[in-house]
Length: 254
Image 1 (cartoon, one colour):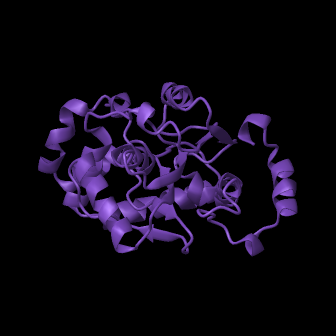
Image 2 (tube, helix red, strand yellow):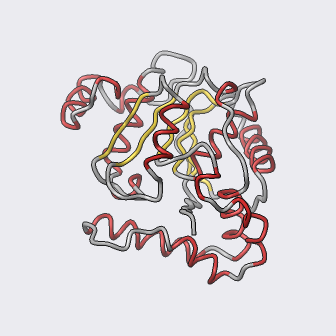
């Protein structure tokens, strides 16, 4: 059984309006998702956005940037524990059968990639939260997420090479293999890198302060432009410098 991880609720977009969390409806292929997300941005009257995506959300963010490359809608990407090719999960041959499986079997597939060893209390709370979220999803929602996660597809980097990217990942155990991480680094050689010592599959929950700081650092490069995404009054440059030092950012991360 290949590694499968789905983040059903955490596709985030950032613009000059407040951050919004959205749970997307049931989609069965990447093109359908991209078309639906484009219609959402049109409805919200958003020209271009900054996207934060974790795991499957990160892959879909890349596919959306690729989908709109002729008329760009993505200004930058923050990819957390994400991947660029669904074949890493070795499940492309079963992608078209998930819709037939009962909920308990789909949940078992997803739960199989949750950390089972000892974790700190904050990470345990994050896992419990995601298990609760998983329990709230219906069969069609679970099946569609797994289908999108495993449907044979890959990112075409030449279509999104001009988009600023930050790659965020963790050093401890997660559903993302070392090979998948290395492939992301090769795909985006000029990307900023944000490494967290720990965080598992859900660093945006259990290491939210560090993740939020990396997001702020990523968005800082757009201050003073049309697509600035942080109110300058929210954080000072001095504060960011202090926090950079606290996290021990390497030069490649800056």
